Image (cartoon, rainbow, N blue to C red; front, side):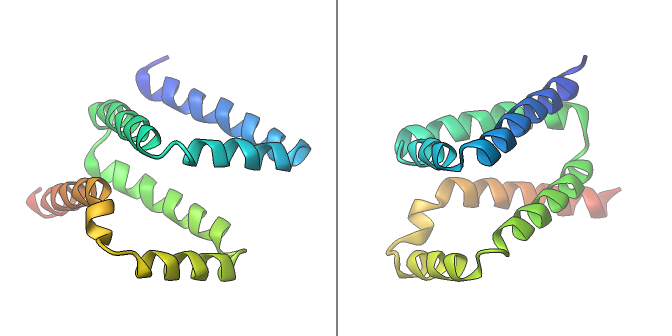
Length: 127
C-alpha cells in the first residue's frame, strides 16, 4: 500500500470509529472532541504538524489541482454537516467577528491558504 493508501486507511479507520462513537455514545464523543479543542496551543501545533505531514504525502502523489478538487468535495461535505445547525454557526461567526486581531489568531491557516491559492492559480493557468 502506498502513502496515499495509508492516509486513506487512517481516514477510514478514524471515520468508522468516530461514527460508531457518535451513534453509540454521543456524549462521550462530545467530551472527547471538547478535550481536543481545549488543548489550545498544543492542539494548534499538533494540527499544524499533521497538516504539513499529510500535505507532504498528498503533494508527492497528487497535483495541486487534484488536491484542490478533493478539497472542494470536503468543504461541501463539511458545509452540509454545518447546515443542520444554522443558528449555532451564525452565533459562532458573530463571536469570531467580535474578536480583536482576527488575522493575528488565524495567521497560520491564512498563510497556508494564501500559498495554496497562489500555487493553485499558477498551476491552473501556467500549463
